[in-house]
Image (tube, rainbow, N blue to C red; front, side, top):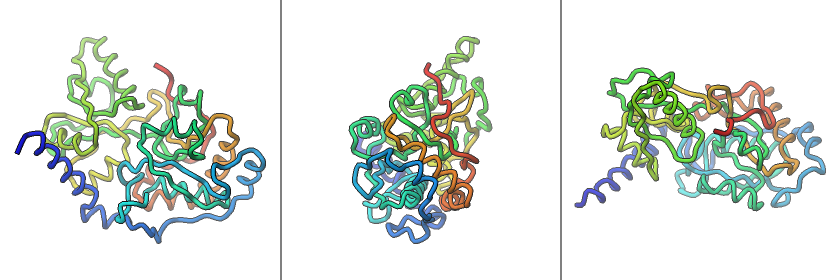
Length: 309
């Protein structure tokens, strides 16, 4: 067997074991029926903010794009067709608040800006962070803290990553073109300017391959959105968290629903989200997936985001 083929098979096996590990199955419901999904009533305040200001892509339906990337935020159910996870649950709550049926459109994450701009869906709920550059084309409603996690293999000697000097000289995995990449590049710039060793960044086309690199020791750490990595750590015990950084570092920027700029949808979403926070359904929805630590205390429309570098 060639090394390349062995690598692919190992990567696939790791991905499947992480997704369908018994501990993960016990912790969350991956059935397509989702009987425990939290539901909401129509929100009069949200409907008032919406009235006459927006025309939905499909009448009577809230069409939302979600990338079924990794649990617990979004993945495929056991039928390999239905998108489930905390993002799908939140989309359902907003649809309920508007008195609409929910349609989820599975997408590749990198395709969301073009699909949203071209009017294929009303909104994107898929771990999108607020940035000043994105705000030029899109409106945002925050719904989760934008936490990114530093994770290492369980037996790694690394115990803490809290500031730039802690990653000097490390072989670090992150995702290209993302907020976390911008942050780590700035940390690296600061380190190099102080005479510290540069970071060796590694990029992979899929998460299974990146996890193989981390577990085999070819990489020292990974920096990506916290929720999927926390799920993997709890399910497999193979990795552990050694630090977090907010998406807006050195300030704060959170995860948000995105819609077309000036479409008239943003304020209604924010009103609905704050009602869901107030009545507790928002917190119960996050708790279903074990990410209540990422809850926001108040949703905002188009808050300050990660600045342009």
